[in-house]
Image (cartoon, rainbow, N blue to C red; front, side, top):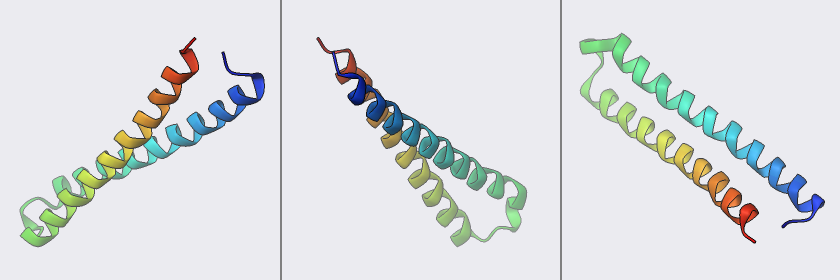
Length: 78
């Protein structure tokens, strides 16, 4: 079981990663909305760039989520 100081550091890191994850998922959603609003008027190159940005934001969010989950697993280890 981690000491109290370790638990505080874990909580701080988890909070930071959770906020980063929410930010990245919001940005990914923003890219989807931007494409939906623009519809067919958005040039193909812009659509491709938007898809790449969305994918990148989702990947970053998944990394932040995995970091939190790995700390939770370590925290629960005997």
